Length: 262
Image (cartoon, rainbow, N blue to C red; front, side, top):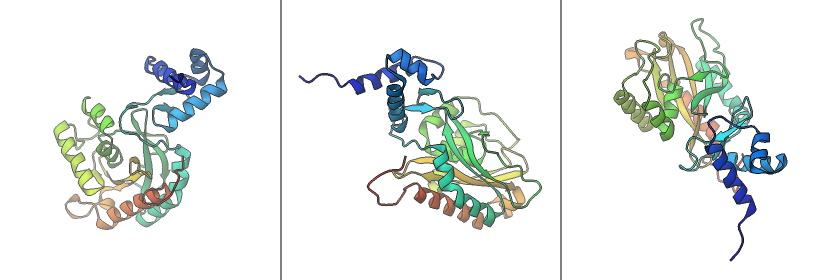
């Protein structure tokens, strides 16, 4: 009978270690606990991060077990890679719509803005800036992530939904119905539920395998985003969907290729 594979044994040890810890760990702490040199530990955690089993905090550099490590495999992209590949399309979207434009990802169980472009007009526009954490249940960007991330949705729906304005969805049943609508249409809209005089439209960004790994959207005054009946203007929805599809192609979605960019 063949012996155990040492690298797999060590990777398993890292996963058990992180699962037992409440707080994220540094590379040095992991290396010491597993009994390997830092270079070996670095190779192990890089592989686990690429496989979606371990998450690395962008600011602290510390590592933690992913929220759903043994759920459907998810491709983990570097935030800088997402930002650079989305740059041309977000600039174009901001220019065409004249609205503030943002790209978000889920990190550590929270929706975070990783790129933003300022509005080209509209004194009332108060864009979400890079680094901002977006309430998952309030706003179009957060609801895109909720609609396609079952683990995030389960986590959010178990909590009390906080009202940011009088129009924020705080009823779990209403939110579930809205997320179903997002999946059916392929885009989300929010009117006055995050900031009372602001509206937003967002759409999912997919990776090569079709997994929703980011969202792109525009935010501006309600009258700028919406027309009669507070329905989003068709041109704005079309522009957001087009930008999301273009960024997805940049990330390999719908492109025949023998490899993946990590």
